Image (cartoon, rainbow, N blue to C red):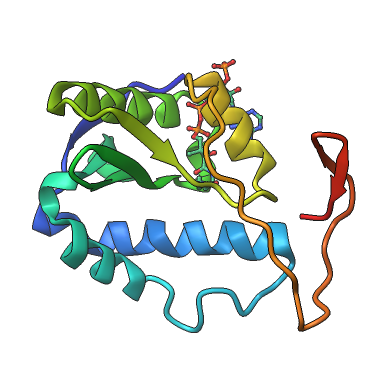
Length: 166
Ligand SMILES: CC(C)(COP(=O)(O)OP(=O)(O)OC[C@H]1O[C@@H](n2cnc3c(N)ncnc32)[C@H](O)[C@@H]1OP(=O)(O)O)[C@@H](O)C(=O)NCCC(=O)NCCS
């Protein structure tokens, strides 16, 4: 367990947050075994996200002057979505993610949203387990699709007695 300071995003955090966004992409590349996910500069997506949500919807975890975690919120009128949440690989499993999610749950409650959503990809089993442990127990939408590219998917996810690949 590491104690981190959770605070609102500041402009001087940009370079470190871009690095965290790259780590988020690297995690998705790893779970899908697909090194092209996110393109050559996936960290640019951080700047796009910041422009979309604004600095008031981003928080960072600071430990020994270093930014080791990032959480964001996409706010709509009556509901909000957690996006992104990322802890730097060297610091995972030590309570930082929990501190970030606790912060964003408190903000969502204070702002009076009816729902706080999170939309992990189905392959991200570790994150789904993590969110469940943080209180996300209600399943909203399920996205099904047909892959015309013949990509490779993992079998064995059951829902309502049906087998899905994911
Ligand atoms: C998901 C993530 C944000 C969690 O942050 P973290 O700092 O590793 O999580 P914590 O240490 O706070 O763990 C909180 C709980 O989740 C569990 N947990 C965390 N990561 C886990 C993992 N990889 N596998 C199993 N359990 C895990 C912890 O054991 C802990 O459980 P407990 O409350 O029963 O003790 C982090 O692992 C991460 O950045 N993952 C890669 C990016 C990602 O998948 N983001 C989510 C995209 S939607």
